[in-house]
Length: 122
Image (cartoon, rainbow, N blue to C red; front, side, top):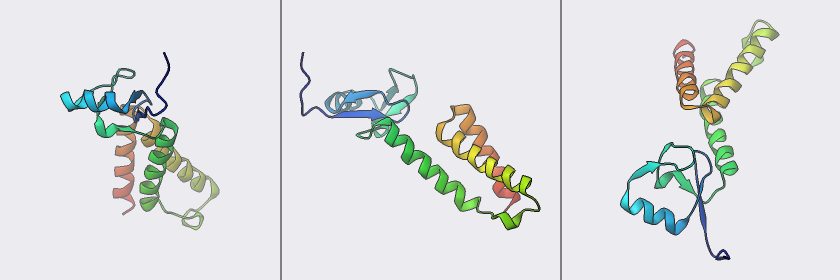
């Protein structure tokens, strides 16, 4: 069976699972949300996009990085030594990674670390 060349696929934010646009519309006309058939995460129609998963992940990471850098904007001169500076940079990158790519539990832990850091460094 051949694929229709005009067929548009939408990709889930959670894992990149692909559904055709008409299937997505039909499914979500009956249900506000459902479990992703691939990863079992709860999704709604807004969680599907024409962007492939890699593009979505890139945009998501950029958004998280921007949010973190608004608060975590210290400079090398703010630290007494190179080790403290490198530890800070590692902390920032760990936050970005965990918030962008971590499991639900890792994201929640990273959000808490970020919240604590903002309170301490306000």
